[in-house]
Image (cartoon, rainbow, N blue to C red; front, side):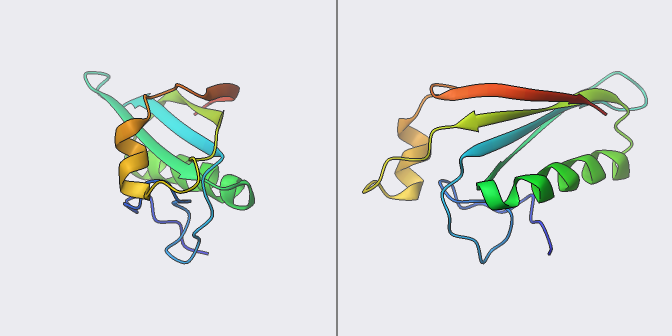
Length: 107
C-alpha cells in the first residue's frame, strides 16, 4: 500500500486516495535536521485501519530527509462531525480541540 503524505482531503484518512474513512488518529512528526538549525513538523491523519501504515510512512519520510533528532506523537482525535463538508470541518475546528496524545516515539 502506498501512503500519500501530501494527500489533501481534509476530514478523511490520508493513508491512500481510496480510503474515505474519517480520521480518528493524527500522527505528528517534529524533528531537526542534521544541522540542528531548523525544525520540521509534518502531520498526517489516519483512520484506525491505516494508523500503523501512517506511522511507518512518517518515520521513513523523516529518515529519507535526514531528520535525526525528534519524535513522533500519535493522537487520538474525535472524528469529524457528520453532515459538514470536509473542507469546512478543517476551518471550523480548532487545532487540538478534541485530541489526546497517547503515544510518543523517539526517531
